[in-house]
Length: 273
Image (cartoon, rainbow, N blue to C red; front, side, top):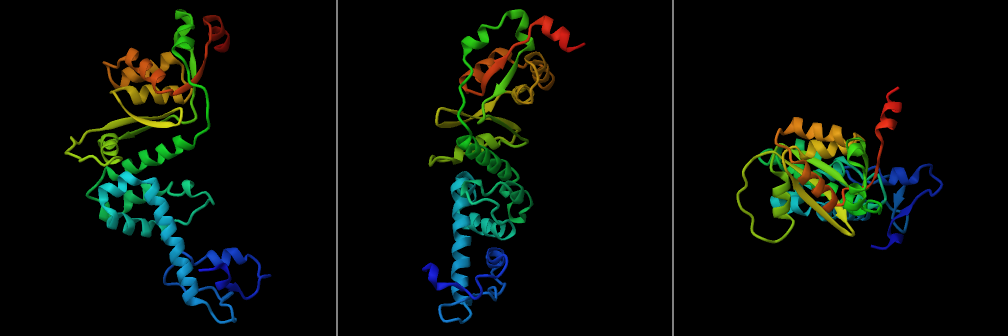
């Protein structure tokens, strides 16, 4: 369909774009009065074609953002669910990769997905994956930089997160289900248990790692600006057998942080005054 197939009756109408788009996602609503065909006649059918194209495009955008969710549900189920979401939630940005931020919350309340309570968390991981992919570049913290901090000052250091780093927690095995459904390999049964995931980007490759017990509490503390000693305490509170050495190795290997800020014991005493 050419752009000339739909012509505004009055181009000077205030907020023409707003009136034109107001019913694009409402299939039962009539076309706006200010839209006509080439000869001045109402453009109901032409507008319906345009309206359908917009809906199909947004569903396709959701499909590209949430491929694991679509594989789990099947294409027909996914497209029906996505259509309902599109009608309720118009895009707020011209960038299609920004669309779908509310889709996981929509899935939480979508009655036909009630027998898949982990599905929304899988969607949250996929949304975080895309955000990590588009996050700004930054250098990765090296093991050498951390090793250079004097032992007596190590507990006081804070970490600057890499822009791509995210932590997601689920009461379901969402990380495992996500990993199983992002490819084409056969999937099997999964034990229903809580899982935490660390999403980072190494160069141009986004990775999703399953965190051990206590790992999410540790990383969340560091991401919120807590010092290393406080983060270790959070990890131990969450899991008494929390493995700090493994968590530090995970931090470096995953490129979760960009750099550190070290405080000496004297600086800490001054800051507490």
